[in-house]
Length: 121
Image 1 (cartoon, rainbow, N blue to C red):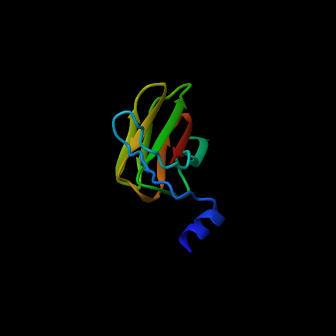
Image 2 (image 1 turned 135 degrees about the vertical axis):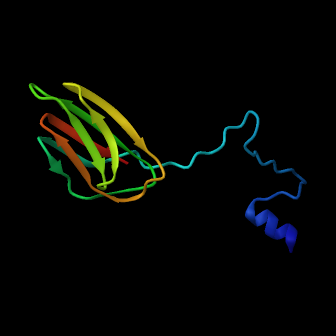
Image 3 (image 1 turned 180 degrees about the vertical axis):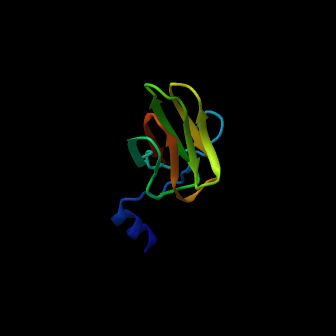
């Protein structure tokens, strides 16, 4: 019965070998696709402001810009206890990487400047 079943299914009765490629030298490991980063929060303002809450994964990034035509000073505090940015410059921009920091966050901006803060995760 096996030869008949093999013939019906199109298999020959010849011996063969199956090889399996495993990641290693010369073979790149398969990469699990990840979701591209998205804006979790984008706020533009002037003066002092507390943002709405946003939820991040383990890793997120804060991008900021500010410009002060007269008075100077720009501070961003995360969750009322972690100062992420403090500057006495009249103009600036930067990026702060936050790792091992999942959960719900609120940013407080204290400045007389015009500014934009973006949380990306």
